[in-house]
Image 1 (cartoon, helix red, strand yellow):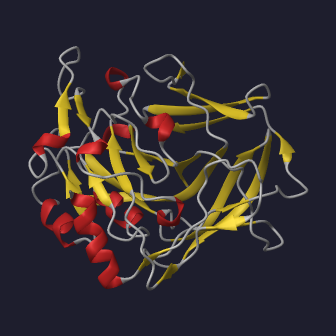
Image 2: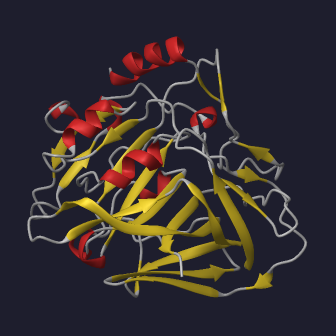
Length: 311
């Protein structure tokens, strides 16, 4: 399987350590900091997921450790789900990769990136990246089509056909820290992030102690009707600029810069915290700190990161 091949490459190059986001009930602080050599750590699975209305409800999003939301052509949105502590039976609908994904995923050691394809000019760049591409062309047996949905919103990945099992928390080299919240923060019941043609709303549920997700004004649910509900939501303000790529309609593909520094809003436990984010290089995870420079801990559980254009 691909996991075995990627693990062999990881042993040669050195892998990563992490204290990932799954809730173990202890609430202790931990980090997924920098790379360390000599660690026997398999890679994460990252899946590019469709977020058009026709693609909803998506499958497998609730099992992801981290979900990234980014702006794409025409002001709409796509998702990247990262799996380390759990592998769902199915993930999708799977869609195409973007140039921004490559910079974002460089923080993980040779991740498996599942996507349906990419522009012909982008494919050589993907081949040069330190990742393992998992596409219907490279791994046809890993994909299925849902006959009840129309293309291109019907392609699904079967993770068990490319991986023996989840790699574990140590593969989550995101830079995130988990533990007790800061002493300050403002009470927050709801927050909406808007793209030109998409919107994400996060509403605090005291009963579930989670943030309920809505997309374009509609509750986001699993195929079984359960609300998607991360423990922590990060609105990360970044530079979104034009790239050198366009879609078939001629719309420019935005490039989301995730290396650098800037402002962020972190939602956890029904409160909002202003934060500074920093990612010195693509190989690094992203650190979040409070106004006094202290690490800002996330609540243990799933994390959503929504990249928003800096004002």
